[in-house]
Amino acid sequence: MQFSIITATYNAAHTLGRTLQSVAQQEFRDVEHIIMDGGSTDGTVQMAKAYQQQNPDLKIVVVSERDKGLYDALNKGIRMAKGRYLIFLNAGDKFHASNTLLKADKCIKNNPDGKLPAVVYGETDIVDDKGRFLRHRRLQAPEQLKWTSFRQGMLICHQSFYALREITPEYDLSYRFSADFDWCVRIMKKAKEMGMPFLNTHEVLTDYLSEGLTTQNHQASLQERFNIMAKHYGWLTTCAMHAWFIIRNYIKK
Image 1 (tube, rainbow, N blue to C red):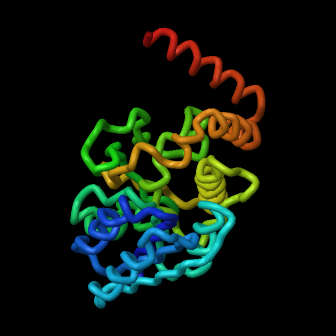
Image 2 (image 1 turned 120 degrees about the vertical axis):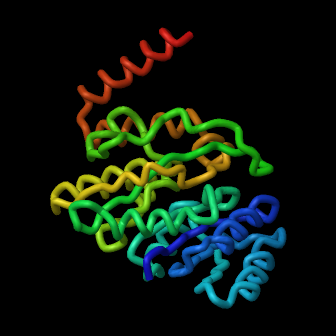
């Protein structure tokens, strides 16, 4: 199986529908969809089970049980996954187009150096609560990704960062809002150690719901990201980069 799509939900009946529809409409079918629900009471589970019954050609797993939050739910999904690459698509997020996974699969198979990429990545568009386009994501994916790229911030959205399962760690639950930032850096460092390449699809992969967990807890998320950057890149580099962020924002104003 090429892709494992993992979706974490909790009382998300108002946004989950377009996520499920997005997966069901993918032209590429060699996927599994793992839906980890935190014990919803608003019809989310019933919606997921109906989707499961309506798409018998897809391997769909629905689990509803209490968890310790988003990243704990995603860790449970990682343990269950069987696909070569892990994709995280939370309630309200969706694939950019019906051929998104087909294009990603072709990029992997046509990778010029013939090596299996550790990370397959692309761009992200931001959508509102109705799934309508708002803007392109401000931070753009680098042409050539390196493990040091995230010194400039999280240049690739979590949902547009497809990670090879065999080198994927679990999320560090000591981070409540930015464990995905730490997770991405750890994967890239591991890939560098193993001499594995990163593959830019040059495609918009994801339509990302603007009001996610990180957005809703902006200040706490920024503090966690600072600590994560300091852990991986050092305090001096992190302080210097944040000084530049402040100057850059001031110049733009």
